[in-house]
Image 1 (tube, one colour):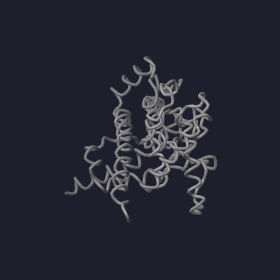
Image 2: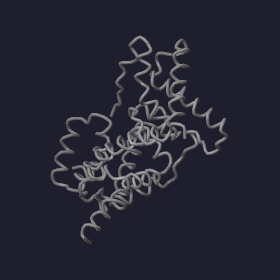
Image 3: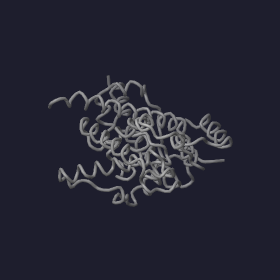
Length: 206
Length: 69
């Protein structure tokens, strides 16, 4: 169970194009937190500029992207401070309660068989094209315990590698696997109840 | 024999790391006979796709809204 990262960038000379390769990931990271396109764009631009100016401080042993995200995080934190938003919580403050434990028990019986369990979804591709589906998707994502939601977001929405997510959140590898397993169990159940079962119901009523 | 809980844990891990040969065999044999785990597998792939689409559409939505508003 060893995670590996595609580490080609660490061996390349650090040129502007090498930095710019990370722009899409940085941008998604900023956008998902700020929900403001121009602001996200500005902060990513500032991040790349700051990185470019302080390349001397970059210790090759840190992953380049981890380093860049570190800079971006500071920019975002500065922004929240300036705009006096008190809702900002640092990663370290996110602790999920026993909640996660309890719900995995609920998905399976004590000998590991499904308790209920996934039904077949009718045409999931079609859901992706519907506005209402995305509203449900957001609700289901927001229903996850905060730390679980953040881990899932960093992996699936921002697109970080699993190992990078562990570094970002301070999770051990084992906890990462458990967290992602639970997040997927929860999300799929929520979508099933709130979307796919309702679609089935409407079809059979019609 | 691994149970459904263990198989779905492997299916989930399979999205983030390359499973060993033995693990892949175990998952493939299991999902052949267990429709609920097969559904879980398909739905986990779907969740990945949905997450990517969501982020794309968020970018589009916010970029259209932002000029001078």
